Structures are given as structure tokens and as C-alpha cells.
Length: 231
Image (cartoon, helix red, strand yellow):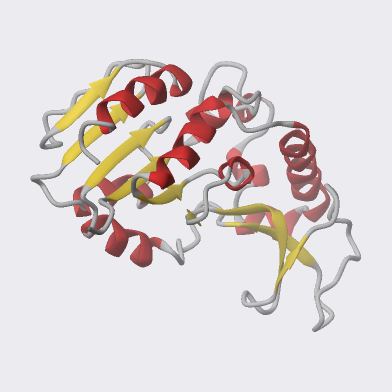
């Protein structure tokens, strides 16, 4: 009998418990930088050094962080479910925890991309992209990040996977960043869904959505017990 397809949709809240700053919380990264100065194509064209500095700092932070128990529980669920992680996060903590199928909607911090050919993508060996680091076609490398205002190239694939889910878990995301937040609307209305987040949410628009009002780690502990009855 095939395993049930479990889609995990994760956001910054799951990585926050590994010490990675979120953008929107108090003390988050947007208090230090303006979106328009570091997270748009226009910002890159205006000041590559500042944008590179911002992402180099983030890259250092990710490399020093470790997956937390929530990441590890998600990876453990692969033994009982066909798990696909669709994440808004640009860190690699899901992969380091052992998750095999991870889709990064907003890019990957530990990769670089050509500025003339978006298909030229490179794994980074350290935390730093420097001005003067070039792709095979001779253009400056940029962070492999989907900036505000850019298309989300993997969105259609993610929506297709969501439409075939047997179970859905949303963890650590405000469901405010579109188009990614619209992923929930592609899941079959009849399947069981869980939202793990300590904040208050109005779930009237989401059928069969159960709110586990906990942090990522505590919420995944609770969900793991619930899922044992459904495998």
C-alpha cells in the first residue's frame, strides 16, 4: 500500500528556533534593513555591495545554525509518509535534518546565480559572494534568491504537489506572503490540515484546518503523535 502524501509547507518560524532571524518579528532583519534596499532587483542594480553584504551575513548565520527538533521530526516522518517539504525559507536546515524532497520557493541562500542566465546556478563553498565573482558567461554572480517583485519559478510545481496531497501541515508561516501563501488553496478541501503557529489565526477560510497553537518544535511533537494514527 503506497504511503500517504504529506505536504509540509514551512516558513521562517521553523528556522527561528535554530536561531535564524525572521524578517517580520521584533528584532528581525527588516528592522536593520529596508526591503527596497536589499531584497529587490532594483536594489541589486543600485548597490550590489550592500545587497551582497546583507546576504553574506545571512549566509554566515545559516552556516553556524543547526536543524532543530522540528526539522528532524519532519525528516523522521519520511519512514511512514511520502513527505514533500515546500518551504519559503532559503536556508538548508530541512536538508541537513534529512528531508529528501525539498522545494525552495524563494531560492537557496547557499547557491549563487548568474545575472545574465538564470539557469546558471552554482553551489557556494563558503559564505561569501564577492563583487568580481563571475559566472561561466562572465557576468557577476548574484544571490540565488527570489526577490520581491520577481516571479516564483517553482510555484506551479508546488501547487501541483499540493493538489495531490493526502495531508497538509503548515508550520511557521504567517500565510501573508503571496503567491506562496495561496498554496493552501490548491489542496483538496476534504483532506486533514494542520497549522502549527503560536499566534492567533482566523481559519474560517480554510476547511478542515486544525490549529496547533504551539512553537514549531512543540507543535511537531504533538503532530507526530496525531499522524501515527493516520499512516
